[in-house]
Image (cartoon, rainbow, N blue to C red; front, side, top):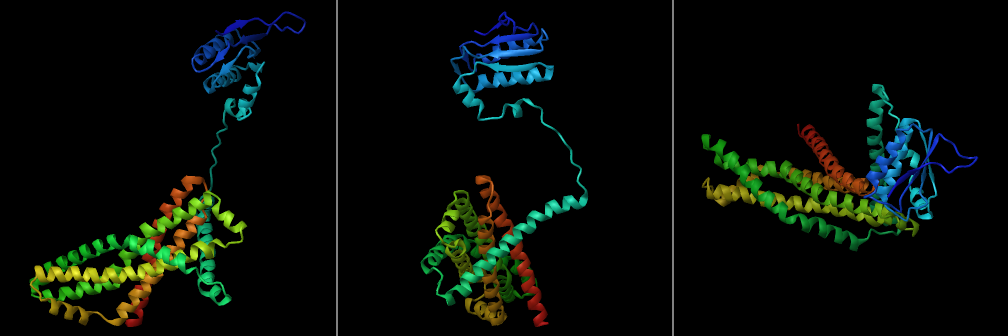
Length: 376
């Protein structure tokens, strides 16, 4: 049990000082009674309170919290609270935290930033991120295009492994999306074209839209959501686990060892899956044309070949390659700059998908603008 005692008599005794003796147990069961007893003692308005802990044999965090609460109440009332007779285990426990930070009220300062400062605070992290990604892009380009001429070849085995994870892993979802989109596009075109008896031109609309726009875009978005985020999470976890620092200490360049194979694999994967997407989507349109619009397969294929040109196919391949490289660079770049533990890994994973899709749209707009300007 806790109790209240007067200070021991003697020349050092001070009538304005009260002493509170804690019982042998200072745990979560005794904490409420301890706080209540000390609060009652504060009612006598002492100038100083000494909490005697010499009898305490066992304690837990709740009991220590009761002492901190008592110190906070004493500070609010202007009473100096001192702890006396702490055991070594209690001293070790208190050494983990600064008690003053728990008892002192936090300062609340409202900083009124001017608009220019606020804009700078929001823009500077974005610029730093783009600078980090730019430096990593330069390092990856050097590892892919220049290092082979210096006798440092790209790791073929790791590139094949990354390609297998990116392409084969995304193949089922790409096939499903391509087939369904081919059916949907054919259905939408047929609804309008049959009014003028021009159902055959359904092949033109499906073929051109899929090859020039929908195929590369959808394939890149799928891989950005799947492989780009996976790369960011993997490299971010390696940064948190200090594995990247370990590679540097061993003299291994993380860019050449980890990033370059991932970037090359994603570039090849988007190109290959883009071609598969085009063929499957056109097959879906052909199936709808034959089953619903009564268009002969040979006529449908012939009309598709008439509508498409080699330039469209070449631009689609180039676009897909750039999309894939962009996804690889963004995912790896954000993964290597992770900060803040597991929360930073999740943030980098999300940002990699958002930024990749945004850049894919921008790059596609640049391709379309350049293609139309050259053809017009």
